[in-house]
Image 1 (cartoon, one colour):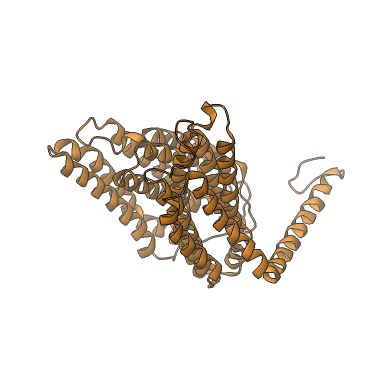
Image 2: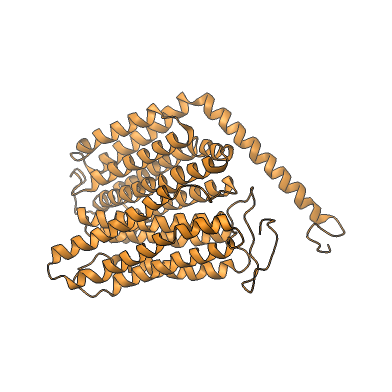
Length: 447
């Protein structure tokens, strides 16, 4: 497999390794849509009744789901998921993931009720992880070092499975509902600690990131899709589609797009491209450690922040769009803390990401987080539309200040990235020009 060409292994058919310059293929994006559907379900299930326990349950499920996606991305660094027999196996994983997402709303229901929902969650999660484990084991079976490292992580899969099954079955045998809920939540928390702890304690030896481009692009795409999911969640959950549009509802929807776009800009204008270059420069264990810390771990608070501010934005926009709620009335419930707190979580995750990859910290981000924290008590006393305006002003203001103060660095970075892109495109165009030539191409096919 190391050559990257077609090779048949046993009876399973061909598989193709990931080359150093590989990019994300279309099948991987297709697979990610099912993951993002799970994000949507988490948001919808939490929005039914926003309480402290509901938020805890949502974050626990998100952490377990994100670990499955991290494992998925590790497999994708070793083998092309859209080639050979691999898509067939991945479709099995997609079906299990879809069923996992559908069962999520029942994962934290009445712990003394029927265990069908939680059992489906546990079993489908095991199927997802088993698909990835078996595929990776097949891929590295000729590499003793990689196979040994994979086997070292097998106990994490086994114990995660047992804990999730225990969380589904044990609470049904406990008469005290409060105690049953605590046992269930405690078992889920143990799963999270086990998974993320094993990732840190397992070390970086035996792993590799063949294509830094593939790894960074994979995570950047899932973050973009998650931001898009937040827009869909707000649009669906706020009932904007169920009634005639009003100017306050249109204004609220527009502000939602503006501050979401500002959060996109905060990562993808400078930090994301610069971090991609940093990962390309890193080699060996340093690259693996950076890929693990910055992307596998520190993207999680950004994804969590997106879900939280989507919940807050949904609640505020729903009230703004409701004609029975006076426009000057402040937002009710936890919408304002969720809205501002979610953006704070996103920016803090992004600052930690910047610190890990670039070893820098932007004062503009620190100032924005402080302003957002001060905005929570202020926004709680403002009308919903004014609260959204305040948040949007802070987020857009952050972008404007960074564009002005980082002008020279931004220009230099963008020139490097643009030169890289145009060089890559010219190389692709030159290669494709060979298709017009007569004779035989490099693959041996007659043209």
